[in-house]
Image 1: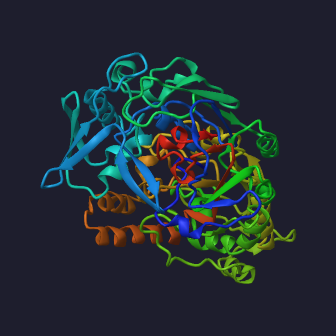
Image 2 (image 1 turned 180 degrees about the vertical axis):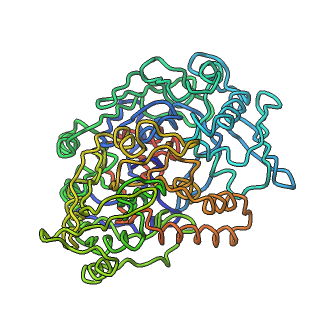
Length: 572
């Protein structure tokens, strides 16, 4: 699932780049050519990842976060150069903190305007942060991480914002980078009462919308083409070289590559893994590769109140099943070799990644022995049987056969990955069938149930297993948050509810010393691993491609910076 929503590579990703042939491969994901910069034109982008909403409190897909970066201000954003990420200002020109680390002052660039002509001020920032804080337990939970441990925010003048924290925290800037600033005058009407309107509002259905970034939205089609127009009033950052960006969603990746090769597209933000080697042979196309940002997994319903098939709550059962999944085969047949095994939830290239977990060995014989020892005997048909249970969640003896939800909004062949998992489980006497999940919103609804409510611990009661993906951050905070109770019905796809872990999550943000935080973060990753909330499968490479009459692309900045759309330009 692309709930983290950011195309992530880590600070040293460039040194792992794959070299190519024909059209060439740019190491580090930053494409530079010898031609002169030509202003104007329409940058035509093909993608298999759609914009599911233009509401930052409602999104799931990473393409939406890309759009938010382009149409809304951020206090800070990322830059990427020489194989390293660094935080730079977006709307913020500079910042400083008090001696005790509890008060952070941001000095904003002046003169910014919303698309309706009203000025962008510190009051807009303060309102956005305070509103997110007020409703973080409900409608604004998706962005709760941006205001973790904030007491309040205040605008001391139109260009000065002060954020007051309850305690010093270790990741102020990286947390703030994960959110966007909304125009108070356009959004405050949705923040009345319980704030529910903040999550039910669909700006894409009410165009034109008030924006304040490098682009405005001309038109929107969830499963078609969304058009971004260069905003001539944008003045707090480098303007776009192109006059417009046309982002087209393709349900057929082969058709997308055909259009790129035929000149109907200028850029593809993720080359299908089966097509990479073919595209590299086209001399008119440049392929850029930056490995290690997106992980695929088996997601296990880990809700302790799960009413049925509770054998799947046992980490020993989940580990045994996972041991018979051939990840090498997944890397070969699904990703054409452009992936590697991964064990931790944050991804191997993230900050503080715990690379001492596992490794999970592929050993079907040992897995069968484990299931035998646990008492799951095979029936006459070869399918194992879970014994009857008693107590609050009593269930009669039943076959170990389950559905696995697979969304159709993946940027890889999820059906083929499921088949590899199905083959492995079958060798253990466990039968699984694929349940079509639909798009991201539909699939997530299947996981959480119709009446998901964290306050009453309602939800996550019907599904057993899903297969999806995560796109993480450089900082591990977000990925660690998705298994907390605070993210029930927002980002959580496991339904896990562990108060002790939740306390550790709170503590890691408050741990200012990097070495101490690293130790705690790695311990949290081990807890997630040992409980098999997920079975991590592979970490795939980011591979994009563009025609050589355009240049200035930086693969590493997707959904991290306005420069991802503003820097590309035609060459002459």
